[in-house]
Length: 120
Image (tube, rainbow, N blue to C red; front, top):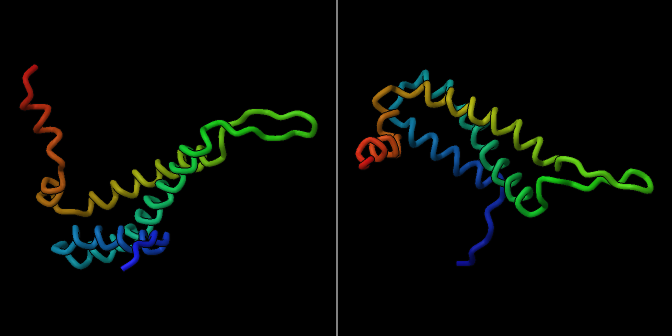
């Protein structure tokens, strides 16, 4: 079997499946509301990854030609990234808010417990 890079569509679908697994035991009405959010969040997550790679490759500053001289400006991908990350975080919060409180506890990564238990 050959390994190939997944298309953006395949990556988005994989993200949507992750969200659906998290919501498998959630009330059907909440699932219906959440499904549109899954699609948007998945698309944004994959797009943010692409933007981040582009920014890493090309840098945060872009040189733009203006006739006989050039000016330095913020790379256009940085502006898009900054706007989209805020929308992604808002959408993610909406998704988490639809989960039952006990399900949110299960999703925590243990970082808070680590901080509480460490020696100061």
